[in-house]
Image (cartoon, rainbow over the protein chains, first blue to last red):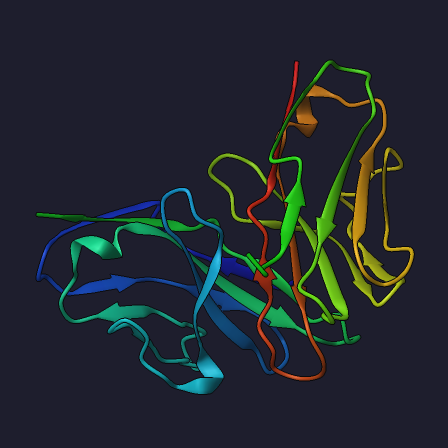
Length: 111
Length: 114
């Protein structure tokens, strides 16, 4: 079965420290992976997707098919990065393009 | 705000009552999704529309749940005979076209069943 696992419910780091939010997935096909972010009192929004191989707000994520991981990284955390982060797998065996989300990791960046 | 709009934002209802939520997707988005999110969990897929056709329903969607998208624009999600376990945030999302397009989420409707 398709599944996304985010092992950490809460991650606290100090401002300026590196951040790594872990995401592992299980999927038999070729996955499409995403990170969504939810800031306080705001809606869920896309942060980045693996296919774009881009850096957004200093965050990057590399798809590692061997380890079935898509960890989110940032070299220097900022206080404004504090938010809820969700890793998501999008599958399309039948054309639905639906997302399967992990349980999320709350990132707290301490001053 | 031209994003995905959901109404109402909050709903408190007594157990056994019926409730209906509305979602207005971004204009011309042909795909529409409903998700449910409970405390400490990520969004869980409920159902999906492409235009007016409901193409997939999760096993989470019991007989008490029904969703429609009559003209391929806005969508409604109805819950009949609500139970306390239905208390959750109900999220709507929409996306456009083919291939690798992102889904845009609404702010959700928070349902509390008392």
